Length: 265
Image (cartoon, rainbow, N blue to C red; front, side):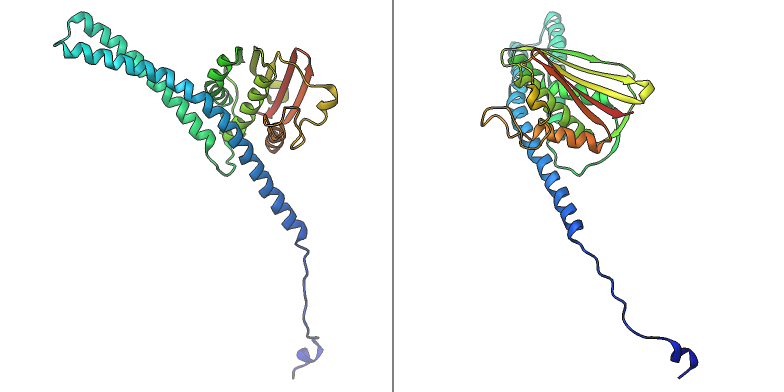
């Protein structure tokens, strides 16, 4: 045995780590993903009912124009007057078909269950998609939409699907607050000095009671009647915007409620 071997103490070294906190965090993340998806599916159900009518109207028009052209062609070779009408009919058919395609595409994108994917987001395009999906429901509810979205808005870093879910939730809440109709304002502006984008969803509805304002972002808190909501919408909005390093604020009184989202530009 060498001198080195005589002077070295041998033994075992053990490391112990408490994984309970890690497992708890994993469960919380899993629960959050589940809540996000559950809320999205509820919003999707409400959107789908409206989109069915939104798509049905242009398709009915397309079908009528196509049948009309078929009847004219059955009579023989069309004259120049009918050919001119055909050009107008085909332009209308193209526009209405493209409109249906855009609605379906937006709905499919919204419905996908996907992992958060951050990237550059054009907020103006995103807001216009939200308007496209909810416009028919607004009309049925006798709600006038006022759009005040600035041009040349900077891009933001975020998950477009989650941000769209936030806006849809706020638009639905605004509609629910105006059962007899009203005005919904969707606005977006660039606050250059703060390097932020401000998105505002404002309604002329019944307002939120002062005693409820401090609780509206809590999961499962709702002021709606049973069967009309489970209180996930605003808590989802808060969680998503916080994840995007932004803030959510609300001001409310009878006749005016405004939700403001601030996102880093």
